[in-house]
Length: 433
Image (cartoon, rainbow, N blue to C red):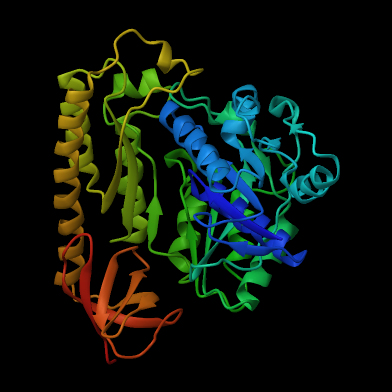
């Protein structure tokens, strides 16, 4: 039978889809594109905003329209939060939340026999164990992601994820290492550690910490680059910074969410730091790691964000000198504390402010790349794709660039120097040293 997957949302969702694809392929199912006719459609949903919910529903209806006789399985965060609405969509056959997704294969086989809607959404607040899914290959990427934990304990006022994913649950360290070894043996040269609250790994375990995981991962034979997908500012200990400094396998890039640069807004968000602490830690990181790239996330137009608070954020961002930002206009998510606010920012104001930060982002990204270029640094590039004349890839600093090449360099590392510092795509030349 043919099966097609649609994935919405974050890297964790994409990891989980890859794991399910591997599971179904190993049981004889043929994987096809989600835009084509299939016998089974699986929609892995997102619920981070009300808009995400709407996109998830559209994806469900699109699959039903593609083949009204297909088995339609809806899984993931939106299914966990609002399975009643999904169950009311005519044509949905299987609904699963964010637990026990390895049983999807079993549920599909059951549905084939009984033709009765299956609903399996557990109380996530009572779920204490890591949902085991394994990946041995990724369909398109040259880097592989490893999910090391699930859930979050922070309960930021804008975020529904703790209610969709539950509390932190860490994957046993031997299982992480075993999957890493399989991926390395499959030819992946860069591994990316990911999760809902990645740096929280081990906080629910008695004898393992995130430091321990990084220590063992960074010693794996055959691994050429190790990247942390995201980490909170207060989880970057001196010990972790020292390890990154001393072991070349670590990518020279950290993604550290800021979310906002005004202290009063950070308090309303229920973030656990202020701008002074954040900037001081960035200074310490650079004292350890020099010109390491630091990227971030920021939310624009959080309820009550005044002109002065937006200006304060701009000032904080300039001081932080990020190498790149991911900029998100605040979007209401029903069920969160922030959604209950009565002072939401008008969409036009948000759009103007987003535009200002996009301009600032381009300035900061170009400045960082110019600094690297001026120092004539040799950069290690993992090439991800090639056409007839160019090859494209990311440096350790996560700078995206191209070099002229008639060879297929996909999934190989090469030393490169920047020729220009254009953002978002720079140009390099091979370093012949």
